[in-house]
Image 1 (cartoon, rainbow, N blue to C red):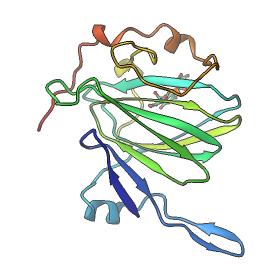
Image 2 (tube, rainbow, N blue to C red; image 1 turned 45 degrees about the horizontal axis):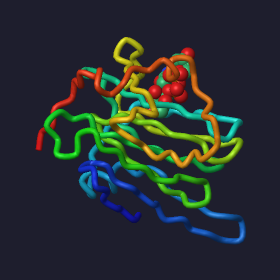
Image 3 (cartoon, rainbow, N blue to C red; image 1 turned 45 degrees about the vertical axis):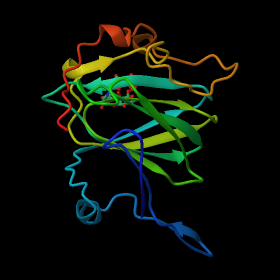
Image 4 (cartoon, protein in one colour; image 1 turned 90 degrees about the horizontal axis):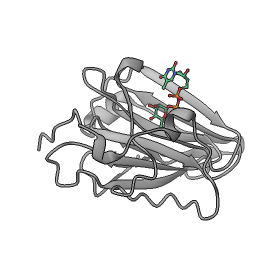
Length: 187
Ligand SMILES: Cc1cn([C@H]2C[C@H](O)[C@@H](COP(=O)(O)OP(=O)(O)O[C@H]3O[C@@H](C)C(=O)[C@@H](O)[C@H]3O)O2)c(=O)[nH]c1=O
């Protein structure tokens, strides 16, 4: 398992080993004991899987507020996507900054996003699947959104001329400036 730090403290990119043979490959995509030994002792309780048939499908930016905040371990099961985390921990030296990484079936990468971040992604190929673990259950009453194209955050989604496909909820999401973040930087 390769573990790469990112400019946002707590966000890491993981690349699990793939053992290839004549049948294909085998890979451990989550090993609680190994991850705890590496300093990531997370009690994941829900696995999510979503499928987007069209390239340019955007989901985000989303978070769940405490007491139902979620850490997420995200990977791509099929196709290719650009996955983004935005630091919203009040007082964090990187509050308001984003980090993005391409996740694909081919590269097998994962991104670990702790509590205190917005999460979103855009598909870069048709028929793309995302699979992610969450450290708390879905709680719609704690659900929050921020617009994907917020000018203060300024994410470069690499969309070029593609018009993103959004849910009604995401199309109506408020600006980052309107967010009263429930998360505090703990140092
Ligand atoms: C997220 C979620 C949704 N749902 C339901 C609610 C709704 O009817 C339907 C679609 O929900 P959404 O439109 O919120 O799905 P989606 O836009 O894919 O939301 C997801 O986006 C990514 C970026 C995340 O980080 C996730 O935490 C989650 O917010 O699925 C659940 O039953 N459980 C869940 O955990």
